[in-house]
Length: 486
Image (tube, rainbow, N blue to C red; front, side):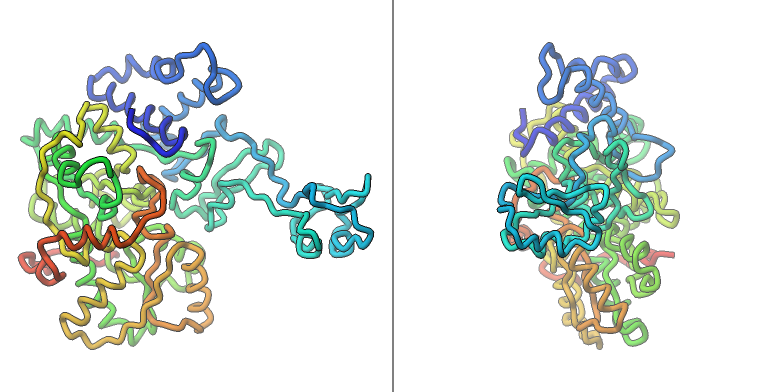
């Protein structure tokens, strides 16, 4: 069994693998009721109160592996039965309380929510408004703030807690599909919908790429994945899944770096400042929380879309599957002006499940070839990479624009920069926004979530045959591609 970081990730993988195996064998309809028993054989439960609850949760995971609720447009759903109803009392008095006679916490509370019994402070949760003044006033730091992992992870304020059931739910009006909650929930109660069965069917219907060719578009973040094999072996493994070819989305990043640099050169004087558009979660965050600033977003499509456009311009019958660490990409391809540009999105977790469903050991594969992009396209995967690429294009092509970048590493930094921009206090004119702290290499559906060294991404970038953006795109006529969003 492949080693995963935690049991939540392993359980998700097991479901995806079994669903994929059945789809490959055309036995999904027959196997569907037995998958839960195969994963949870019993008789003793492994993680929950009983095997029946464990199997019920597996059934819900199978539904999401099959595409989830068709009436819910969000690509991320809460598995209600899996939610453990974590305590939602935000402020709690710990054993550090000394029962002092000053009662500063009580005096600081404007809602009369603190009383003393047994010489210890107690918080009346019915009165508490979670203002935090008691915690600030306590000289012993005996009052602590506690947040659910999903709530704490969501910097878009999209997780709600039902006061009656204590269950988590997603506020779709706020959700930006970044997937932070998916990874951070320790009970695996939040999961992204999968298109793994749709991809298997698409490849099968291609008749070994005779009816149409199926292309895998791999995100630059693949440099930090599948560390047990060489990336050249991963490429061969992907082709063995039935793909006609594997193309780096880093090539699309090169195209967008060139295109966005031109756009910034033309538009910056009028708009005063602009943002990148490659991170769909960041773009959605602006549109939902700062709609008045949306006209400052670059109109360039994302590298994923640019890569697919290039392929489908060359081969109009082609089908494209993006593979990366991002849940927001699953929503991006369904946006009204982008429908049909990319056929499906898979995550690195789903790719691993596909490898094992096909019984492909990538560490045993021969080394394939991957040389479709430049160093600068590949470093789009880490925070600061987009800025480096844009600056490179500006300098290489002697563009008359003075870019003063602000690199926002994670949604909190993005929000701070946007607030400053809103009040005309931005100390710069070009915001690079990445919803995931660290960039795409730290995406929520990565195989590895440990600390990522951006030097490793740069090292991968230096393996590219092309050293500049101009060299990478020189053979393409970009005039034939529509690279602006409607």
